[in-house]
Length: 461
Image (cartoon, rainbow, N blue to C red; front, side):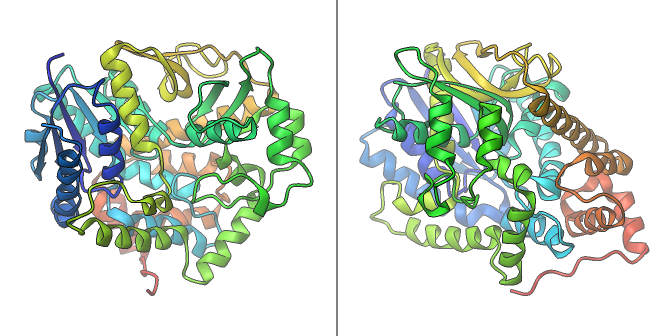
């Protein structure tokens, strides 16, 4: 590669300052010529605000990188070496619908889990397809580095259905888990003293830990993190959007694996639902809090003297996403072969999943992409949960591509967080109508639903 051109889809995101911080930290590893931030018309104001701040960050770092702001995606993609994706179809208003509509019916409302996460996939996957179609024409050798949620499903669609094998999906959650273990061992964040193995799906993985002496310390970390005497307020901080409720210690100890923090939605379903319903009654869902946080962030970003990532960005909930993207790019460019947890082709790493499915696994990041590290098989309990979730993902992806209502209904039926039957139909139908602007593949079905009286009433502000 010569000097790099990087294009970021969703450049007006509040995460962009972290992305630039990550690039600046790796200035000696990445010979960057230009970074293009692209967004849509509705995001133009935020693009200009955060783009100006990004330029200040580059200037403060005394770098000659060019920063371009544009609404023309094709111009951004032309001859790009790397394309990063961090967009949200429908903006945060869509996330509010994803969370509040299921909760109205007494079901889990969460950004990447349950009905809300599935509808985020339905809106996002067609856009990823259109991006890849442009990439095939304009930058056929580029890498697609995706951290648009639901990352696993988006990555599977990109690789398995749209043929863009040069795709790697990212998530911040494994990094948070690694830092928690480092803290328990008295190590600094991002220390490489411990060895981790992760396996599963995005937001649905398990992991094991070893120390530098070769001793497995998974059980020790389970005791430290989830012991019976640990109160919720004393638990190590995870990601901002998941309440820190204690897991069933005996269950986790019996598994002998550290669960993803998102497993709370599956292991503690009623507890988590009760918390969400209380927030919903108070008009205080996570999506509404995030929207308020983002408004504050962009007020900060307007400061012409701000030329660094503010600490308030950590309240947004996606800390380390962007930094992970920069590290993936640096590892590909320099063939670093660093071990990172990514969504990539399974290739037999998890024996319980199809070879060509997308899994979230510890992988070496090489100049030719991700090489997953073999995990093997899970025990019956984890294997059963994993295969159900993969089947749900596959049905959701198929529905996103085809617009087939019955396929979507199958996905709803097998999702563990959705109560099947008439109530599930009501949630699904209202979400379809609420998001009709961004679901053209379901246009005929949505028209039929509206004709039959299905409607969406926005929540009061």
